[in-house]
Length: 200
Image 1 (tube, rainbow, N blue to C red):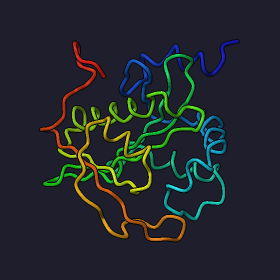
Image 2 (image 1 turned 90 degrees about the horizontal axis):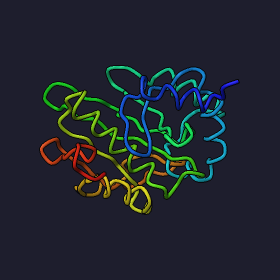
Image 3 (image 1 turned 180 degrees about the horizontal axis):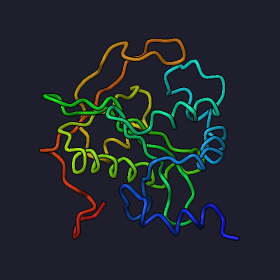
Image 4 (image 1 turned 90 degrees about the vertical axis):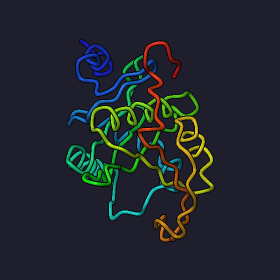
């Protein structure tokens, strides 16, 4: 019998939204629920200190919210899978998509604890940025990050975003209003790292 990971790997060429050397992005499906919950639960101490407090009692409940709002005019959310074995490694999303004169979005992302420091998150973010600029025709992407979150700041630096300043008391994290650094890129600054002849 073919395993779920093998089935994902075999079908990744057909249902991938974006694909790089290490990972690919695709929209979440109902059958992703158990793996998503397991990955989140195994990584909670790694994730929750950076995330806004929500009225969610469990990761199963969080999945329902995530899955139900993953594909709309305002949000495009993707799961990150590695090519090597089809394992789900994390998530990246284009949130708060703004049309009209703004044409921008906010980047959201997380990586499961077992998959940190392997280049998966950086590549997943680069793929999402490519999707924002090439497919959605947005003009600007931005990420808001707590100044003490060195790992996340390192990821956006590698992805080519530039520092724009600090938003004071920007977001409530674990009951506290926290400052966030703003990092951004516009389409004029973007160069596709996956274009033929270029290195990611």
